[in-house]
Length: 114
Ligand SMILES: [Zn+2]
Image (tube, rainbow, N blue to C red; front, top):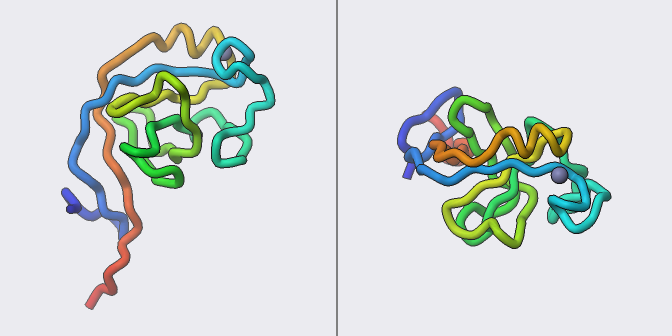
């Protein structure tokens, strides 16, 4: 159920999640090709890792204070109300630490407007 609608996009209820950050390195991903679970190349400021049971892959998510991301990756530690934000380098990801943040699920308006 949409919380409010903005420019044709339905915005969901705020959900508080624990957010951490990661990068494409071998320490964060056990591989270093930068390819997400969705098969796309991970992009800083765009790619979000989620629990696909909680947020389906492909979903656009507004992260409080950080902007709009696309759920396109997963992680072994990312279960339930956890998100992992993709960053350009490892130091940035480590410096981000761990925060409780509000997220909002964004959905394109599917019902025709009268
Ligand atoms: Zn890393």
